[in-house]
Length: 305
Image 1: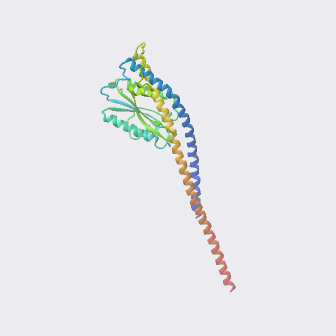
Image 2: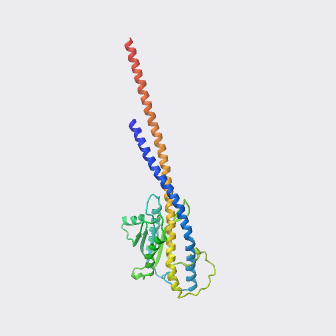
Image 3: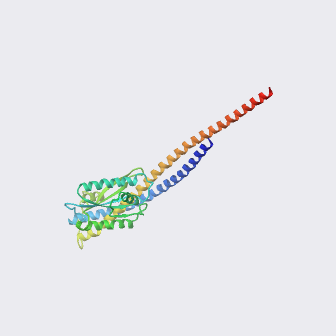
């Protein structure tokens, strides 16, 4: 019985150490959520005004720019998938990967070839294990992305969109990331960034239904769009990276809280088993003492006779 009690004590000690780790990770994730939310809020006005400017130029000029004009028969699309670099975040990365798989299946069902671009080690590992082709990947900054990271990701995507499809370019650019709704809700979303839908862009900028002012463009509307639309893509990718980072921290906080609670329940259960084992050991010792005393008493009584 003593050996069993030692096993329980060893397991309680191990689970208690795990609980301390998960509790610390929960607190760290909770503190990072606040910072990520602030970054999302700070990036939103810039993205909104940039969308407003792009919409005004594209609508006011009536120009057929390749980044705002849909191809009659699109044959190739690029999908940017944003996952995490680290685990212990529940189903955060797997849910984003599932959304990307659904989008890829739909695009292929429409007869389009799909080039996949991935942010985050989890997505890279998933595609690598299944030997799926990845056009390009980036890792190491999903916890706290910067605008420089967004520009690095956007550069090959913009180049792919502006290149002729016959030369390896794409007709459409889609992005899959996890949108931060609240501390308890993070939703994988699929958005088409390019070609830019003017109605959707106007809705995002809050100008849908408004009468836009007339502009004169120097040197031309095409040159203005050439300058604005890459910034638009960068801002959208940056906002998506920030949304994904906030979602990752929220998912990790929730997963670590669940692990901490489960560890507490397991410690309580093991403590009850340890107490029962200790009680059984004490009872057995008392029974042995009483039995020994009784045997001694019987032996003494027999010798007196």
